[in-house]
Image 1: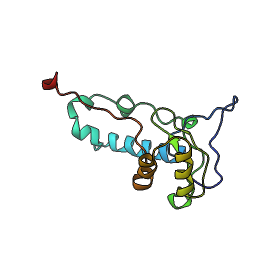
Image 2: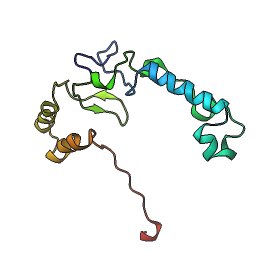
Image 3: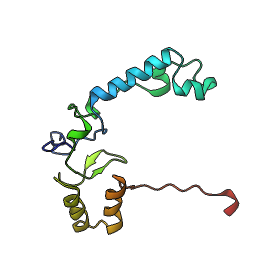
Length: 141
């Protein structure tokens, strides 16, 4: 996270869920993928030619990004030197304050009920899985 950046809130003071990308970057990605589609070179067209043959790009992936759900600010990765823990499985909202260092964030996590393994997972992976899915083997039932 960029030091000093504040996640936007709505009129009730609740955080607005956002994707982890600027609107400018999301729109550029969408437009690039749409160009690939128009040229017949989109990866989905190559992998699933039968399913994509008679569809438009928008029919396959949906509408262009909505600016409401993306950061309006754009920054480079090297500018994002601060740390904050986000809930991004469903909402894309912060669950911790913004910290200057990773160690400060990990200390906050330990003080707020996260295990040492979870905190160290952030250090090792830069992320903390919050949902796990398991496939059931039909032969086990």
